[in-house]
Length: 452
Image (cartoon, one colour):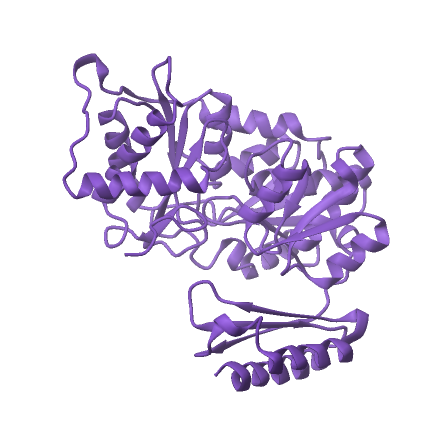
């Protein structure tokens, strides 16, 4: 049986892979592991539990709450809020544990469970492993101590979570955005109320789409993975910019006043320069992944900003930021982490900071985003190959060297074995799209020949 915890909690099809029994069992196990680690020592433990609007979140939330309370943990139910809101409230309320029920940008039938440690930080891998081991032990019949009487956890609604989180967002903005017209696509998800409210309190004129969740329509043809409706709405309403979230609102993509996409790399570039100007870009460094567009790297070099690259995944970006004290990092997909104000990617905060920069400078988002030029990028998945030999094949190394020599300083090659499938991803960037296609196909053929 494989590891339950992936890079972003436990995910699967709700009521098939992710059942009520699993949700309850993991919650009990989490309470026991944290108790054994000394997290609850000397006080009565408290957990914050939130979810996105998926229909399955209703019964999974009930299971999580039941599991925690049965293990002696008091529960504050904050209802439908973004993942970063649950992380923030876990820290702000001094809770010992946070639990978010969401499958982020995945389709509605999926759901997931993510645990946060005290302070709103992601649980360490070692703790996740121990939670899984404890869950499996309990599931196989190993008994556990059950509190009774006054020892059982109490459950109450925490209705102030929405206002507390929005107030936090407004409180960290560098300036207001009065006079700005913004379209917000909430993906019929967790930010459907939060994001429009935050932008309105910050002074923007707000137009909304994708803000009527019914439990079934989350991420459906809307949000950060489907930008067409946002593009059209921005142009139709003559807005200054548009902001799109995913289902749990830990990411943000944008479009400029002409409807052109502004991706995570461009957002990072804009915020990096804004933070440097404000003196908050610690060590003059931004953290990105190896999948960031070469145009981003070239732009940062030109602007005199240091860039550190990590493996793909916002968890690796966050680990690098914490380890070295960096303030800003993110991914092309729109996960942007501003560590002074959030412990995880926060799509609403990102959108607010981007819009605030537009308002402060009086420049259009298109003009600000032009600090970097996105080079054409071609990605080919080569299936049914021995991905374990990507870094050891001499034939493949020679093909990569030839490709890099052909591209020179204005192009880039990246070969990545998939973490879940028997395939190798070939990514090529070049100043010319046709050159990128040609080189990528040649490399894909070389991968098939060398590893097939």
